[in-house]
Image (cartoon, rainbow, N blue to C red; front, side, top):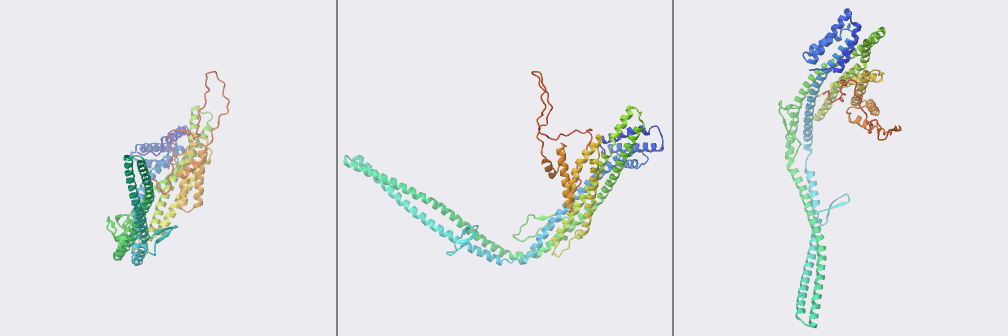
Length: 614
């Protein structure tokens, strides 16, 4: 089911028709008959569109009604506005289909880029194999290993950042010195322990003699025991000091031993690396021809659906085992087929959008004429009934050309997005062609014809980018007209609100396109204007939808006003009576004003160019 015109818009146009009926009722002129026919066709088409029974018939009826130049302006307005929205909806659906095709095209382009990467890798290998004689490298590695091991006259391997890295020989000398120091201390500790044990034994013996003796002999024995215990205690202190000196030596020894093992392992790794390079030299020489064959296979030589399997020399690694099925030529052919399908659908969408722009422009003209007719009828019938006057006034207020200018701008924006999406796809194709040319340069293999000549793609890109720029410019002029015009009715104010939001997003998308076209100053001007509009909207308390990051940053940078305390004196009240206060907005956040008609829904903001209409 398709509903291109929302309920609010239908009621506005229908109300306008009702307000105009007294002007044409009561006569059966050819103009009245033509108007009645056009209204009947429009109403039937609207019913068909709502029920989804026969969209093609609905389009025929709307085309007939919109082209009926004898119908009343309000009837032509209704038919053209509805037809423009139907065509926009059809074009949007086709654009989504084109976008899906472009995504397939992007996927194929990425796969071709993968194949180009492998081709470049294979070409680099093929060119470099004959220059990879490892003899100088092996000799250098052997020298580094010899330097790492060192000798009696070579104790420093190398210096870096003020630090000296010793050789294996230097580490061995340090180990020998530390081991000698440790052995000497351990021997001293053993000697002191023996002396301590002898002193303790002597003290014990003297203590036993003191217990069994009497008089002077007992005293002398006790003194000998005390002296022996003191000697044992002194020896224990010396033992502790020696052991304390032993521990850092043992720790240093462990560090030096680990350092020696690390340097020895590094020296061995250098030698092993040199041996591996020497042993692989013959394999590398044999692989040169295989890489050249692989380049041709990747470019033209695989069967449909057959993956390219990498053939790499021993020791060479890449992050993938195989590449996307099919060759560059096969994928380029598929790419051309997708482009033909997309171009055919894009042409239909562009035709519908251009037609939508025309019909919405006709709706703008019809709205102006219909409004003037209402004002003229009111002026010519000063004594009309109050109900009739109210109907005329309601019609005058709802007949806003600004509403249809905003819709016309939306059609132009969709047109610009379709051209911009096409330009982005062509830009990707330009880069892909350059990548293929660079990957196959010097290999003797020619790129596929589809990717060979960059000039046609360059010309198409320029045309698409220029068309998108022109559509954006036309839409911007319409939106600017709506914003600069006076808003005297609710419909005009609603159109201005929609135009403001739409123009912010359009300027953002337009600036991206301008940057891609190389118009740097124009892009900066457009982006600055979009930021300025965002700043003004936030300052004036207008609620905005979700913004792109650069515009959201501009909105966040707007300072919030500091709330002011009310200076009104409180009204005296009776005891126990509270004074009512107005609700406050303590955070000073913008308050969203509800629309006059809750069914009104502005068109969604346009997406940035290059992302496609989907």
